[in-house]
Structures are given as C-alpha cells and as structure tokens.
Length: 231
Image (tube, rainbow, N blue to C red; front, side):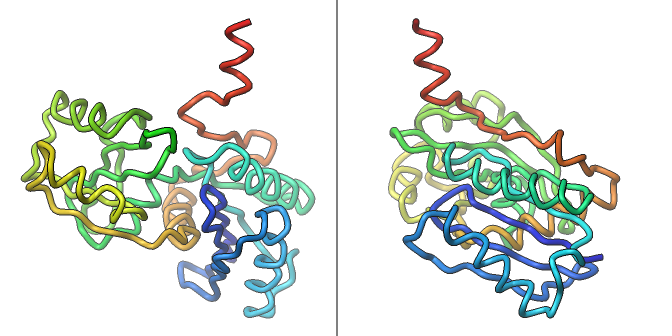
C-alpha cells in the first residue's frame, strides 16, 4: 500500500511517502514560498524519488489541524482534489496527535503547538509501545490557562512529558511554572512522516474517509466567523 501524507499546518510544510509502513521518501523544503506554490513541487519530488505515478497512490493522509487557517486549507484542498480525482480514500490526522507520535518518549504526553496571539494548542495523549490514544480534548488557550487545566485534570508533572516542535519557545515558561519538573522533548516541525504513521494505524482500524467528508479541525474559530458573530 502506497500512502502519501501532507502537513501544511505551519510554515514548515512537508510531504512523506510510505509503502507498507516504510518511509520511501520525504520532502521538507523549509521554503519561504507559499504552500500553494511549493506543495505540488514537493509532492512531485516525493513521487519521483519512488518512481511512482500519482495514480499509484492508494491512500492520502493529511494533517487537518489545529493550525494556521489558511495553511491548513491548502493541504486539505489538495488532498481532497487528488483523492476525489483518483477515487482514493483519505485519512485525517490531528496535528497534536502527530506531534505526540513524533516523540521518542512514551507514557503520558502533552503535545503543544503555537496558536499565535499568545496562545497554544494543546492536548493529552498516552503512548504505549508506539500506540497512541487521546486522553483529553484538544483546546486553545494561553500557556498559563493550559497548565491550569492540566492540573485540574490531575495530570502531575512527574507523570507527563511535554512535546513540541517549538520547545525552545516554551521551555522557560514551563520551567518557571507548576510543571517545571516535567520532562520536555522537542520534535521536528516537519510532521508529514508522523502524520503518515498515525494514518497507517487508522487505516488498520478502518478509519478512512471519502474525500468529500474531509474537514478541518480548527479548534479555534476563524476571524471571519468571530466577526460575523459580532454583527
């Protein structure tokens, strides 16, 4: 089975191609170009490295959020279009799940990613022998609010590991707060391979979608929605 995975949730867009669970090619250009310009080039490069035509892809996977609204929509639109054109199934993967999957640590993992505006997207996952399960709802709030919510849920500093592709940004805040004793692990911001591996497990459980049912997991409402609500 050929699985093509995309992540456009941040400025570090990436593409990964797996065959039967093994990484064949990965492209993470770290480009300043817009995702809408650079993404198709990355897909073509990943396929060329495997000498695989686009029609040979069996399943598509995409990070569906949370993340930057415009960036997410690029990846979702591309996957929807390609999957519908070729009649292939799709798998949606949470960005926070992919961040947790990319960690070497196991146990109770707390993935966090930058939500801008002084906020973070965060959640709690449990990883045992490489298998992930969500343990709380994904949310968006300030770091201080997020840490307080973890304490309310009974997540102790000794029992969890914070994981983030921007760990250097949060390290001092975590060190100075109630979770200063909790271990921390940085992961690569190029999440496509982690998205692909999460997707492979979902496929094994029969958790695929028709392209038309693919939706974004924004967690936070867009500015357009918020402004409309105020009118």
